[in-house]
Length: 229
Image (cartoon, rainbow, N blue to C red; front, side, top):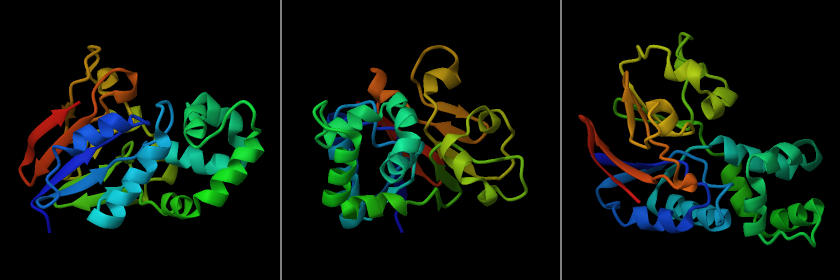
């Protein structure tokens, strides 16, 4: 078991930043945990997907399912039902990274993605909603702190919850590390600093919006260090 973890969240197609932050990860000493939202909005979602899969397959990295992975899968499986919502949430950039252009129909690109990326789709489909390590819970958006057992949090809340998690007291005796909500919103000062409050650590630095991609190093005592690009 590793003595430290290296946590990254909300890459959103920022492949160059993803590769840059990994230079600070010690693969021999640190468990790599990715908190989801590899895709959408940025230009290189395809590359981010495949780099993350490589890291999981070859280095035992943990990838948590984010709402944007879920939106991508729903678009592939029920295109007509979800295309409008997916495009509204930045999905067009992901489709373009897979080769979509205005000369294609959505049906064309979906068929092409399914044909040529079946292993990737299977990988994304079965991603976990959370990961536990020592006294930490790692999750994309948060957990429901109003129920008796946080593990009974709905799948939607694991990926989408915001204020009901941020402002409900954490009585779990565990620190919850999450992304999803940009830290400048949580900090209420328009700054992308890591948000630390009530045994919760928010690390979505808004990389795709000109902010930071954080790599946060944790040990059993708390945040040991962090880097950003």
